Amino acid sequence: MKASVIIPAFNAEKTIEECLKALKAQSLKPFEIIVVDDGSTDNTPKIVKKIGGIRLLRQENSGPAKARNFGAENAKGNVLVFTDSDCIADRDFLREITGPFEEKNVAGVQGKYKTKQKELVARLTQLEIEQRHEKMAKQRFIDFMGSYAAAYRANVFNAMKGFDTSFPMASGEDTDLSFRISKTGKKMVFAEKAVVWHTHPSSWAKYFKVKFFRAFWRAKIYGKHKGKIVKDAYTSQLLKIQLGLIYLFPLALIVWAANQNQFWEPVVIFMAFIATTIPFAFWAIKRDKVVGTLFPFVAIFRTISFGIGLICGAVREVRDSI
Image (cartoon, rainbow, N blue to C red; front, side, top):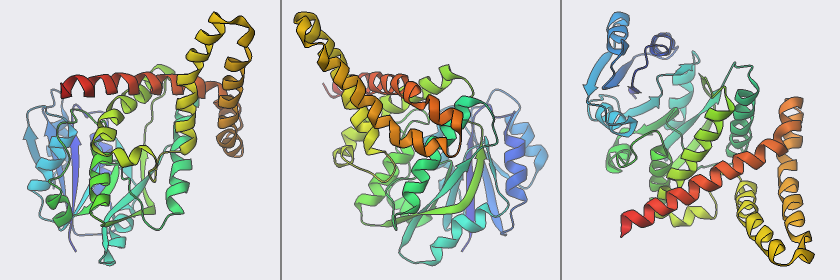
């Protein structure tokens, strides 16, 4: 089994060197590293060349989905491993993420995110991810893989025609590919020890912006995979309930404005929303008391951001279909 590690990079001069040095120090060898420069205007290609021993491909700026596909087209390995230019792989990352392919029925393997950040918003982001990873670790097979740490059999990836390049940014093209593979009946698994370290958003503005755009492009994903609206291996069902309650709340306010004797309806909806945040809050408090305590309040604005993004994405899908 030979692995090809593929990294899309756009103006990544601040992170690409550490990313590549971590990959070159992997305990599992041999393997090839391919960096696809997505039209960078900074020193990214110079840094890649300076490190040496890395295949550097270039394309006009077209987004990470097309960059990953371009890397895959030129890869020599029968296992394609994807990570991002701002991720730092543990020394045994490659060994852990390729190990499950010893089972012939495994088509894809998902790795794990960690962070060393101390900012409150980054700690919250990490805990959100960790809870979802706990959920995935309990399942024999999964239907979701994120390209920050993902590996596919090359023949499966090529049969699926890679990532959908109609996603113009890092916006759900990896989720779409996972769902397409899952529909074929092929198996994907979660490798908890295949770890990459990542820098999450460190400001609340960036955090809520990320939530908005993930929801915006999730509308496109759900348009392609309607069955996943109900359930998938990664998304919390409570998040969907929260989203429904956020949509109901302004309607309840309108009813109250029309009949001011009905004030209990928005109050009940608000209290129901808070109740849905308690399971994660209690889980988080055991790991980070501040994050767990503040989460019910943050969840309100998180869900509003997600809700607006989903509506905007749905409007875009309808407009494009006309």
